[in-house]
Image (cartoon, rainbow, N blue to C red; front, side, top):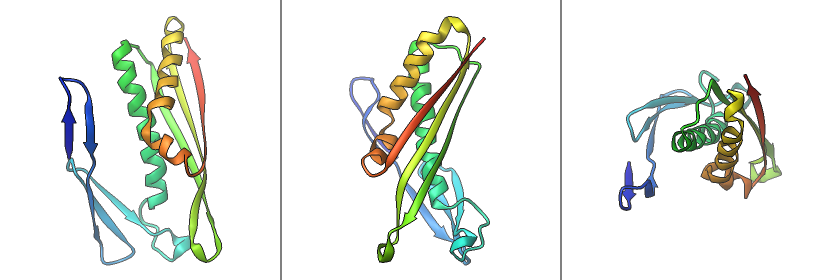
Length: 154
């Protein structure tokens, strides 16, 4: 894991790392650069055992995580108080003849609960998360991506 910082601000370049090891069956164990591990498997629909998440689920989870952590970054900068925050995601892949599968669309929903007095800040945080999440921006160049918002105020 490498990060290049400029004058005490967030990194200019961040390098993410992962290595996957085959489990001897239809999946593997991913070792992340920061030490975490995730197991993956081929879905039953494609002849696997379907024991763990498939790469497509991890891909959607990565984008949802990017939206969440980007929002949390701005939450911290704005000192916004949240009562709850979640991001749901789903995506569909379609077979393109002999060329295999392609991601065609992805849908995400950011749900936030906060006090009414923080409404403006909450909306701004969501706007910034949508604008700055580099993974959703990347996917939107290749597929139809929509990000919904749901706000709840107490």
